[in-house]
Image (cartoon, rainbow, N blue to C red; front, side):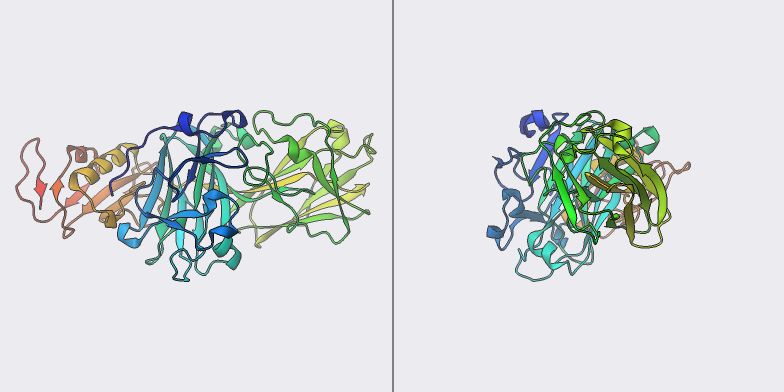
Length: 462
């Protein structure tokens, strides 16, 4: 099907605006046919902004608590290997959260293999067979990314002939300076490898009514904490200073709970990682134990992969009932986990939250003018769905380019450009758009022209 005309409906469909920094909020129920508001006061819109595919329903809708988890969109190979959601948004930084589920919706008992890209960069890979819990109940993934072309683009790419699936898609604009961002970090995607609330149940969208102005969901640390000593969760209803502030807007609830131990011992976590990437780890602390009322009473070393990185005294740094953040980047990993140890120096260690983000370099995109030209060519040539001309023609570079399209780096290696079109024997009907003049690096190979080129006119094809 032709690429949908995309309308910026953020103002109309944004979830309750007071929860977020900006009005640009899209909660898309993939495969869903109606708008609704859930019990957590999130507004969800019916499925839209897709380039192809068909709606589906999980086989056991009764086991899913949230309405948007019961439907999905799948993309048969007949509609091309690459299909996308493309949403018009203002340029800026975005939190993008996806939900993937299979639950034997097609009665074939075969979980699909496919890749997922965001803004032309490979970020997630699903391979068959999925873990049973992911297949049956689904799994969420999220990241932070800069959108510079006015379109938030999430694409799914079929492996072999499998049909990719997606259950829901959330796109939320956030502070561009969050997570220590600067101009030289805009070419990196932060992919969530663990966002933990310590000593607490999971909270945030889909878990509770607690507000997070970025829409982040915080997972309980229960399965990540490796400490052998008896754990002691702490909580308070007292206000915590320095929460919900620019540029990260970390929520109050995160710092109203914490995990410590009953006796003096190391507090330990193990985080799974991909050794090919570097990681940005954020530590969250708040001294919420009223018995700690002076510096030196709770002091511990932060040890990462066996290396003593930093000595922490929360009270000395900020006092009590005040949020404290500390960040560290881990590089050159040799194993598939990061070990974190809070080793006691004085008193018992304490932590409120942990975040671990893979630093994924953004792939080069196709030159924007050439993208516009290729879209015009897609329309004028009436390119069939089966050819998968969706999203960026050339990116990600790890995927095949659009069928019949060859790409290379431009001269200064700042973008990808179209260097060859070979569309012979495709049974195309239409004409070559004059936008093809923009493709200055192009070698053109068509077959069966109905008439020859003439000055200022492009041929029809039959």
